[in-house]
Image 1 (cartoon, one colour):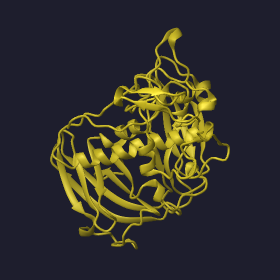
Image 2 (cartoon, helix red, strand yellow; image 1 turned 30 degrees about the horizontal axis):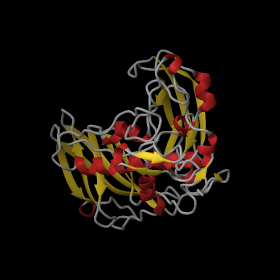
Image 3 (cartoon, rainbow, N blue to C red; image 1 turned 180 degrees about the vertical axis):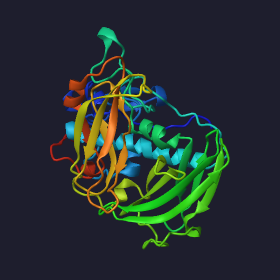
Image 4 (cartoon, rainbow, N blue to C red; image 1 turned 30 degrees about the vertical axis):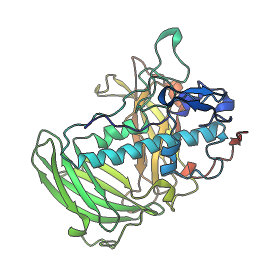
Amino acid sequence: ASEFGCVTMSSFESMSATLDPRHWGLHGGAPPDTCTAGFNRICNGTNVMAQRNYPCDSVIAAYFDTSGDYYEATGPNSFRRQLYHCMIGQALQMKATIESRRSKNEMGHLLWQLNEIWPAGGWGSIEYSAPNGVNAHRGQIIGGRWKPLQYLLRANLLHDIMATCSGDSTTQTCYIRNDGSGPLQCTLVISSFSIETGAHGLFLKKPIAMKPGPGTILTFSLNDLPCYGSAECGMPVDGRTHYLSLDAFKEGSTELISRNDMLLVPPKDIAALPPSSGLEVTVGNRIQSDGAEGNDDAVEIIVTAQVPVVLYVVLTTEAPGRFSDNAFFMRPPVGGGKAHPQKLSFFPFGDSLDLDLLKSTIRVEDMAMYQNPPPESLVVKAA
């Protein structure tokens, strides 16, 4: 397919370093400039965000509540909220687009674009990479931080094996696709989870046998498949209170080879988020990596929560490197209770690991913490 993409900003760590704190906000805490001439626009005014291509107001509005002074709010917490929404919005838009495209007879996708070329608004799934030496920019890291979209691409969206569903909750049409070079034999499990309680409903447990790819697709409807005695069998899934999970396990084992956690409505329509997920992050000691990431060093990271379900957990740090997973959901173990602790690895970029910097700058966000304006925000209204 021809190139396609979605605009977004970068992390607070990247963006804030290039801005005066008075301008920590998507609209810069100042009146808008008057701009003309289209793409190569000429702007008259003093708003420092006016030429930070590209704005993501419409992306945020499609998925999140922007009532009140959302865009005019400034301050560290408000800016973090806006940037989280902007990057998750890009990830959700691209997730929907790629899943739709992979349902068709398309043998390749050209995404625009991989990396940013400045620490501002753009199309990239990886942030701007600072150059070495005296010209390095504050807030940037060598190699560029991965945005949530880049993690979703690696984990599921561009994986050889992917399963997803579309349509409303009463007419769910699903497919599983094999783009690998070998045949696929697995067990596909489709479940619903209550966002408030973590209660689990089994919709489908189906053995899958597919020919080698690329482009091998099996399409089915949830209405045509057995639910194996689930109490919620045949009942519509309310996307305001539940999400769907599609898990593919290696045949005859519990080895997970593909997972797709799916929201059924825009996040702004979810009615079951807690006031806080009680997230905590523990940075462990160095562990030996298998070298697959180009470095033998790694660090164990553990994320815990005080609620059963957490949506789109995002970890960020000033240390150069990436996490083994990010922008993920957390769910309770079988039997219920708090969400199962998420164990991750942090892989450094370059030849050495800055463990002290990782420990001192790591932070965690999720969808629940930003459903309401942060209390520390300072609102600056345009004149």
